Figure (cartoon, rainbow, N blue to C red):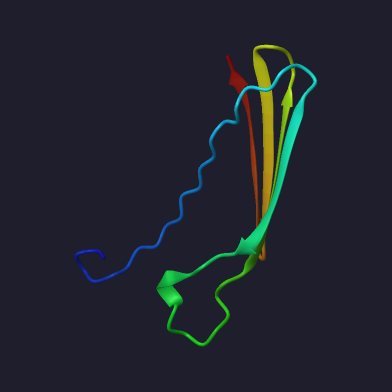
Length: 86
């Protein structure tokens, strides 16, 4: 809560790098659920939208693993990507 009484809401997303994978190996995950909105929990509106998350990792060689993910919510898409170096 701010000094003037305003409430500031922010959301911070993060991702962690996967474990190293051997060359040619891959790993994937699919997750679904709903987001809990603790700020509007007493409203009678449906503020808990469903989300989908897909992740994929691939071992490029013995030292590099590529990672990518996408999260789909009602009004937004979020993309993650990166490399894990050994």
